[in-house]
Figure 1 (cartoon, rainbow, N blue to C red):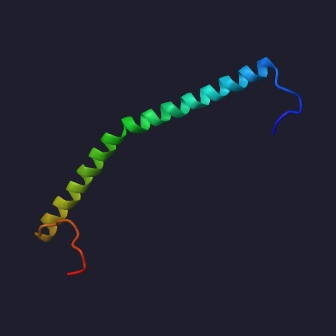
Figure 2: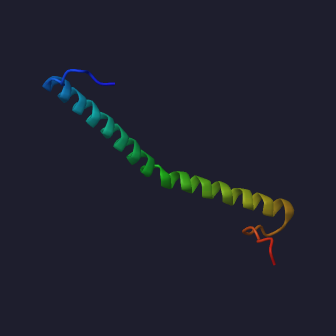
Length: 71
């Protein structure tokens, strides 16, 4: 929704400042997301290994990658 009259320099400056602030927040969020990817991946792999070890002990079997059904 826009105004019928042209923007004043102060309104334009305010719009640009708010846009820059929002873009900065978005960039900071992306940065934090990328920083925390590796620790999350490590936790997931550790949990996966724990479950595999548990199943191996419980059923005394080797748990490997899923096999294809064709063949």
